[in-house]
Image (cartoon, rainbow, N blue to C red; front, side, top):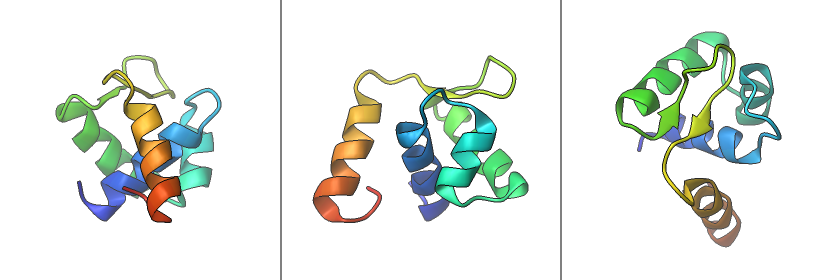
Length: 77
């Protein structure tokens, strides 16, 4: 995963409801950056973006992995 992919994954993992605006704030990504990385992770099968304005992980336990990895390493993934 690229650094942008990791930032977005971290934002999704930390998001309460998966709303795009909240994820952008958490991850520090601009609207354009968010769109690029969201589309990449959707194409890779990591995110589901079927609900307008929201995303969620498709992979079981991936949210927990991202949260755990960022805490244990002090960084995102």
